[in-house]
Image 1 (cartoon, rainbow, N blue to C red):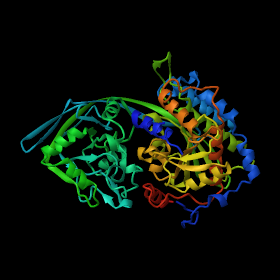
Image 2 (tube, helix red, strand yellow):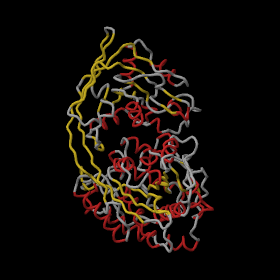
Image 3 (cartoon, helix red, strand yellow):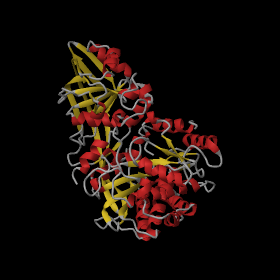
Image 4 (tube, helix red, strand yellow):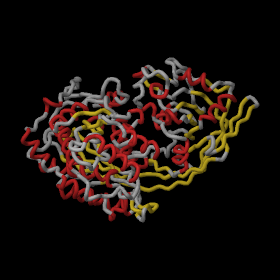
Length: 572
């Protein structure tokens, strides 16, 4: 799973461990899908198909993808070559077809940017000077593929949360021209970080609260730079986490304009530095914060203050690859259901307890094992699917969802004909579960498909237990949601069918503390893989039902992704 920051991902998992317990038919007229009524396979057919997904098949694939031979599956290493070739070979042996170009691979051009900011960020205006210190007061980086980027005397503007959310009646950029300017924005979103939990989705973070969104929106508005004010409580991680992420080399997708459409400088300010900056502008931080949490807030220039900063970059370009295969549909072959999982992990690194191979068995060898098992089940099913089924193993998830984001921007199959993405990431090897926990619960009708499949297994739906951590935005399904494709990310993880909730909480906490992103995340023959097989069977049933329909599942009316889907569907 992607560590948006290492601390935030671990904190999210610890929080989870401690908790108890758009429809568009062919006629182009909107019609709500009915998952339980629309299944075309009989119960006997479904049982015959899901029987193919067993603990034995999961074990076979999981041991292979997480073996030492795969060298930790890191992009740009021999581990990438071995693991991606293994996946392609398995798809071929199962009889799945390659992509339209005849290949099982999609090239993903990436660039590694190692940036070194100037040690001082200069703030000037009205005779007052303020020199902010790199690492102590600010961090900065860039997505522009240039040896050097700089902003010089760029006017500073406070733009609240930096959010444009029409579905919530919110626009922090209303009436504001930020071309050539640098915006300062608050972390998170008004409902989560502010005092009024009736705003947005309250304490459940929306995508508008993610720092990635704030950079995207500032760029769309034409800003030269964007600085996020770090506040530990709403950020859910300390400044040390921001710092560690900022100083590391960053992998990005190569783009035709070499990142020219991004802000020249992206970065963070400490809360203390932001308060001093506002004071230099004759403003009070607390008053601005209060104003920013009111509907109708209007951005405010920071009293003629300007910022000057620069970054020296080292660039390295290479190509990674996604792996994909397809089972063509029989009657609706140009409509697609995607199953996704990420193949990458952290390769060979610092030795811990004498082991330096970061095998990534749970993260995300389990997802790959489920992906291959589901592909095998579809291929062996008595009935071929009416819609095409795509199996996609993506690169660079641990570096920022890079492979799935690249696919979403360069789709092999049209997005407006893509019915759904069903994503698998970190399935728990602790036996069968009573629950099916849906991350990002409340987003789309896919939850009803999951509910129907869970009912068949005598399981109950459990909403995301820590929605404030934004876990919905941290795995590859989000790349599809971002462009409007309804996406499901769910698994059992809180209540063991035989050992209860406390046992699972203990196992998850142990994994988070001792195994997550460490060499210790390796295959254990003592694991009970029946729960992974159970989740894979459920995912198979969801895809099977979607494949037998003529409608497309909808986003909920208040989802921030509904607009992107509506726009995409209108192009049919």
